[in-house]
Image 1 (cartoon, protein in one colour):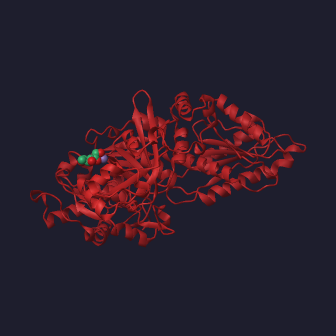
Image 2 (tube, helix red, strand yellow; image 1 turned 60 degrees about the vertical axis):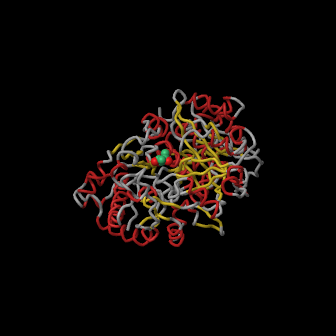
Image 3 (tube, protein in one colour; image 1 turned 30 degrees about the horizontal axis):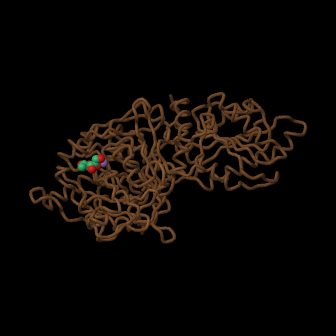
Length: 595
Ligand SMILES: C[C@H](O)[C@@H](O)[C@@H](O)C(=O)CO
Ligand SMILES: [Mn+2]
């Protein structure tokens, strides 16, 4: 079955080979080398990068080298027609500065100046970066550390790292533009992030907010506005992979549903899952059934469900649906994970979206619930935390939106990982399902019942937790913490798990400490986290997040990324020598990308 996914055209990377326009010898001598630089980068991108839907990143190269404004303008035209969303200029030589630049200020842009001394490529780079800065067009500058021979075909490692970092972040920026965040239901339990801020989405991300009342779920279920064949497929998959892993009912006697009621809950949450997805991206099957408008969906690249309260005081919760949507597989097979926030925490949903678009992997949504000091851990469990947990750790746990990829049951070279969906095997998907117990939801919280996923994330995975926070008067800021998952032994896990909501999915996180500032110890990381939620990705992706944030003009208020990995537009240097202060001043100076 064709996997349902958000439509639309993936943004391409436009590559502009810039040349010294002086004919009669200079230009002719440089044509081949200059165009070949562009072709080499295009080859690097298309052989290395994918869009989150699994397709290979596409590049568009200018028809000619660009030696002046006419060729620059013709290239702009070509790029506009080709759906270019990110721009990279490359050159080995001197060229005519801003006569050759692209002026579309809201597109991520970079210039690679070849470090070879036969021609002044670095001089063009510096000149044109200066011109961009004067014109209010912040641009990333890429200049290799070591001189290369003029006939070198190599892209040095430091140049490669910056070219890829720029492209991953640029593609993420371009993918968000024009898409929606869909809120199903309203604000959840007074959670600030659950209040959609349309100006933030519009001006910083180029996105729109869509809203659907939760009653639409009931309408579609009662009127049968969902694909019945898919529902049947879903139910047999659930029977095989989920109900077979149903946990004990931890509810007090008077709240334990009968088997018949529980089966009805499974049927209901299966329909909810299909309906959430259809609301986000549409479903052509609905048009065949006569529901053309419902078939369109809301063009949502991310979404969230209010869930608690009201709805969950009456109907089954969204825990199952949120978990499955955030997972890289379902009854239709292995597919791209959706980005779906429980409690409709739009800011954590955006944080998950940043992570997903940068890594093409499913994301963990969690409460930042408990700091466990080594002393408290010893007092409570009788054992000392070891390894990466030795300095204490943070318990990340939320009912609902934690992807089953977060079990850590996919593996690479024998180590637990969370893979891009196209690398996941059927066996690994089954392992993730086997590691997940589905407990009847806590009906003191979720009166309508539901099924909550439960597992402990495997230890030893590099993780990055981030969160976009909104600050009145300042605007959005981003927090980043790189670290690792740590796994508690059976006994310690049981003791700690029983003290919390033991039927929810747990990830234990040890941030990498630097010994100073917010990362002087684990407690300080949690004590300075700006909200109740975090978005957790596989991998140490903090540097990519910092580059992405600078493209969006969102300052980073907390991170533990080594300074040498920080890659921001060259203009940031003009705002001061301290990386954090200059970031704030630059973001304030430029303001939101789409304002
Ligand atoms: C206790 C509430 O029902 C939970 O949903 C709570 O732990 C939260 O997730 C709040 O973010
Ligand atoms: Mn929560």
